[in-house]
Image (tube, rainbow, N blue to C red; front, side, top):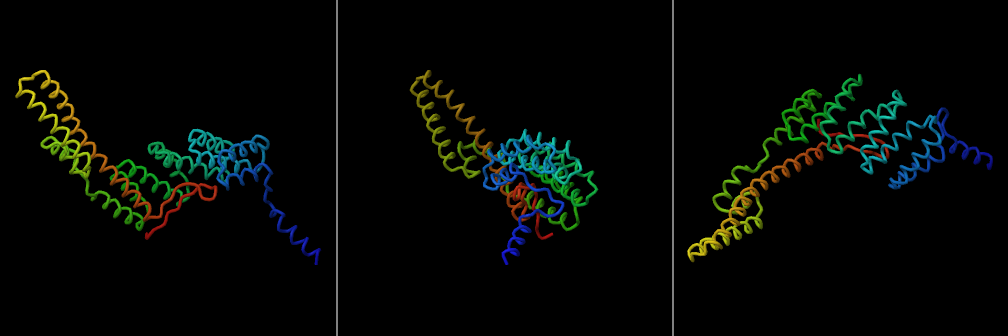
Length: 291
């Protein structure tokens, strides 16, 4: 019985045939990454790559290093690590993941133009799923930049079911009830604060109305009392407050529209169960919905 137990233990701890056993440095780095200790994990992955640059697991180490750097939002080093991985291990499974991750990290940091360039490189991939992924992501980059027409052009290259889902979502996006900046500015030009009230900024509306009212009344009273110097100063200040009130109304309308569009994009991603990032230390994207 003890011999059988020892044999079972030996089988459990022995790596499968053909698999490369983890080095102590890489195993320790993985444990730090699993605990979310990104700074120390970066150091240990670099230690592993320095001590074992020719290891069969070097590509995996570089991919994991890029993941930890991404968690720290050290985008420049992420790009450098992934490009080095592509240069040294272009045909490895990790190399194929690096190509996609280079585009994903550009998207994640908000550099949508660069992300589009990198996603377009993925269109040369013969794999149909990779091409669909790239077209979908290109559409998202346009939508993030509030370019629904361009986004729809990219989504139309997807499967009919996906295209229909995205077309409906973009139709709802275009139909959002937004505020008109020119109208907000015109209202505040007629009655200070009314433009702010139009976009739902009640406190700002009350403040703009009160301040402009005080300066206007003060200016009129100073001129009526023939105190022209004080009246001129108050008039000068009131012109500034009045102009600022108009600009503020238009700016608030723009911000309101941006918030509404951003909120809808987040809801759209949530409804499609869209997630971009690292899953258990590996880069990935989850997309599911009623396609």
